[in-house]
Image 1 (spheres, rainbow, N blue to C red):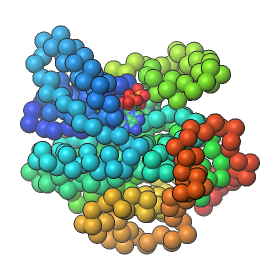
Image 2 (image 1 turned 90 degrees about the vertical axis):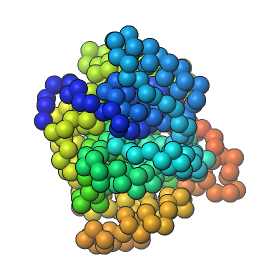
Image 3 (image 1 turned 180 degrees about the vertical axis):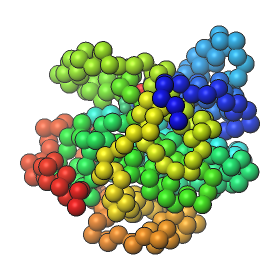
Length: 372
Ligand SMILES: NC(=O)c1ccc[n+]([C@@H]2O[C@H](COP(=O)([O-])OP(=O)(O)OC[C@H]3O[C@@H](n4cnc5c(N)ncnc54)[C@H](OP(=O)(O)O)[C@@H]3O)[C@@H](O)[C@H]2O)c1
């Protein structure tokens, strides 16, 4: 299964790949690497201006290597909006393309408490919920593609930070407490849980779902997250300095993702968690089927208004995959106190951590809860 930071040079001619957040950091190197192998590569990101500049740079870098494989295009996707996510899916379907590879890479990292236009905590929606919606809505296209090609891949970029995450259905949107670092970790835990729950639903298909930690990589992820004040960015600057010796560059950061997307040996139809191109263990909590299904149900509840009826019918009932349904009290809806109509103004406001409420459940309490 490979243990080095490399991937085989497979021919992806006639294949179509989508990379979310393909304009920067690890996503940039991932999209470039996939395009260079011959795939028509769609970088799905929120800024056309940044995407156009990134595509020009990618093409120039590919051409400089002597290759003419640079079929790369931009499609608009803002994961902080379910409308935008749904519009992306509609536009993609209008192109009538197959879909061989979907890479859920985009994320925000450690931002102060921010509510999206849909009223969700930013890490929860951008890093998990919108990718959940995107993936489910693209499944019919990928399942069609898989019938002939027999090898399609969904790759979810998580992080070793998932190990510090917990799953608390009562605090998905920071209703009880908020810590920007922890909410990033929670979202990365949801990425792992989502991957395993998704593969369970695709066990009869020719789609392999993989989830991974790309390494500690020099990108702007946390620079952006900590940019709102000089105190925050100075603190992160010190953190970055200390992490310096173990940091890899974005090119190395893309290797595990690309390997999961293209390595023929990984066409296993089994979900695994990877680090440095090797299968490793994610934390036991992430492997708990009951909790994975609870998260699945919560995610469905929150994006149901944007899901097509046939998707709900096919993938949103645990009974259909031979599991008990989870109980309604484990579900959360858009219940954030910052998002009611009367506080609409607040819902779009970036809040400082100092507004965090005191009633926080301790991490130990939640960990015990999650282990049950
Ligand atoms: N860097 C690390 O050390 C590290 C470690 C473990 C895991 N990861 C994971 O690796 C992945 C890539 O991170 P990175 O380090 O490459 O970060 P990055 O350089 O900040 O790139 C993040 C990408 O996500 C996009 N994005 C953010 N919000 C978005 C939104 N609302 N809609 C659409 N796209 C959005 C960004 O677009 P803009 O350019 O418009 O902001 C950017 O393209 C993430 O899933 C992260 O959790 C990174």
